[in-house]
Length: 104
Image 1 (tube, rainbow, N blue to C red):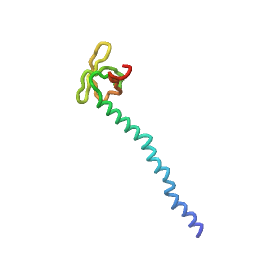
Image 2: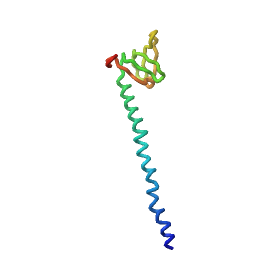
Image 3: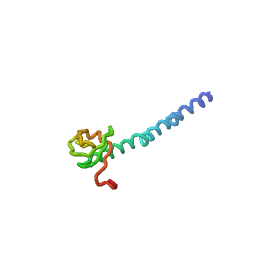
Image 4: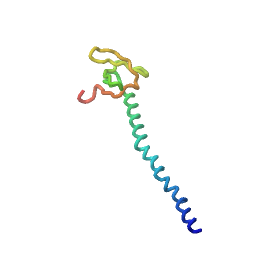
């Protein structure tokens, strides 16, 4: 009878200890994957909110140009060398270089 009691004892207390690695995995995944993505998304939204006419932009497709006008959800850019005007979605803007940046 004492053998049955000893065999059952670790299973009852080991359940929480067995789940501890799984419970620690959730906060680790948050700090490694979710939080950095949210930070990048916030920076990108701030970048889009601060664009203005005359800024140099690069689209997600690699097209570089100068902003001529800004609409609600789209912008018109001028692309060198022929001065071609393109309308692109604001969400397609990957990076912005302002005119008053040092070294511009």
